[in-house]
Length: 351
Image 1 (cartoon, one colour):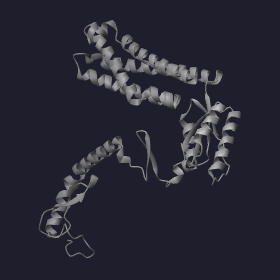
Image 2 (cartoon, one colour):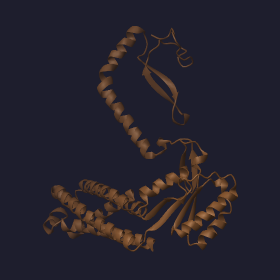
Image 3 (cartoon, one colour):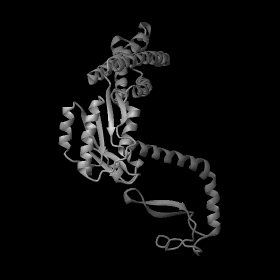
Image 4 (cartoon, helix red, strand yellow):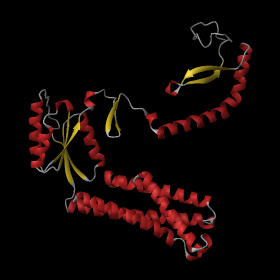
C-alpha cells in the first residue's frame, strides 16, 4: 500500500508538471504574439514540442522524479527549481539559435512571464503533493517503520542515511545502541539475532536491517524463515567497514562492491572536467598577466648568468605513467648530464 501511494504521488506530480509546462506556453503566447513569433499554428506546435522536450531533458538529467521516490520531499524541492532553471536556459538558447522557429522580439518578456508562472504554480503543486504525502503517512499510516540491529560503524552510517534521506520511512533507531556485545562464537550471534527478530515484531517494526560481520553469518536462511513467520522483512548489511582502514572507500561496480584504500576524486568525470577547466583558465591568467612581463626579465637574468637557452625541457612521467615534456626556466649551465644526474647540494652546474 505504501508503495502504491508513493507511485501515485510521483505519477500525479509528473502529470501536473507537464501540464503546467503546456499551460505556460499556451497562456503567455497570446494570439497576437503567436502570429508575430511563430507565424502559424504549426510553428506554435513546434515551440510547444520544444518546451516539453527541454523539460523532459531537465528532469531526466536531475532525476527529479526518482529523487522524489528515494529522497522524499527534500529531494523534490531541491531538484525542482534546478530543473526549471535548466529547462529555461536550454529553451531560450535553442530558440535563439533557430530564428526561423521563433522571433526574438518578445522572447525575454515571454521568458519572464513563463518562469514566474512555473515558479508560482510549481510551488503550489509541490505544497499540494507535500500535503497529500503528509495525509497518507500520518492519517492513514502508510509510513513503514524500520530499525537497525548492529551498533557498529556500518550501522551508524546507515542510521545517518535513514535520518537524512528516508522520509518515506519511520526510522526507530538502532535496537542494540549503547549495548556492548563481543561475539566470538557464531551460535551466540545467531541466538541474539533470533531474539532481535522477535523483539522487532513485538515493537511493530516492518523492516529490520542487520549489520554484522559477514564472517559471523550462520544459518541465514533460517533467520529469513523466522522473519517470515513474524511478518518481518530483514535485510543483511555486511559490516565490512570495520574490517578495513578508516580511510577506505566502498564503491559500487555494477552489482558488486569494491573497496579501495582511499577515494580518488579524479575518477569522477565531473571532477576531471572541473580540474582541467581550472588548470587551463588559471594558466591563461598567469601567462597573460604575469609571464607577459616577467618572462623577459627572467630570460635576461638567465642569459646574463650563463649562455644557452632560456627554457629547459625535461621528460617526466604523467597520467598512466605516460612520458611528457616539462618546460621550465633553466637554472643550470648547459651540460650533457641534465637528464641523468639530479641536482645536489652545492652542485657546480647551478647558476
